[in-house]
Structure formats: C-alpha cells, structure tokens
Image (tube, rainbow, N blue to C red):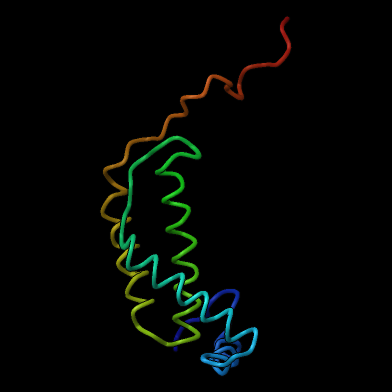
Length: 120
C-alpha cells in the first residue's frame, strides 16, 4: 500500500487480525467493536446534520460520526473488509457535499469570552 495509517500500522493490524474470531480478551474486544460499528452503519447509516447548539442533537451526531469513522478505519485495517472503507468514503463524501451549504455557526450563548468579568 502507498500510505502509512496513523496510530495503527500494517504490522500491528496484521497481529490484531490473528485475534479475530478467537475467545481471547482481544478477540472479544474486536468482536464488540465490529458489532458496534456494524449496528451504527445499519441503524444510522450516513447522516450529516447541519449546525446545532453544542451538546445538541447535531453536535452529538457529528461526534458519533467521527467516532464511528475512526472505528471503521481501524476495522478496515484489521479485518480488510471493504465495507468499512466504503462507509468512510461515503460519509466523507456526504460531508463534502453538505459543507459548502453551511453558514457560519454563531454561538447563541450570552457569556461571550470578549466580555470582561470585572466592571470598571
């Protein structure tokens, strides 16, 4: 391959691949991650919301999308299953299509950082 993945190299992925389907702690952890990623991909799929308040639905969906793309990327390296790569490509493509339509996200809180906490 002509790239070097971050945080998990090809040799480490090959070692982890040996644990797939085993009853070891590592095998069980990989099975859990596969189950979690597959469920998210099936239940949520590709959903790219617009802006929202911090901590709101949109914020959390973006956060979950990132988390599950990260998991899918690691699982692609470990399992070599193309569905994880395809999921990431589809998600990033969806973000690329939505991004130009988004306006600047303006904070609606009343505690602006520019305000001084002391009065003169």
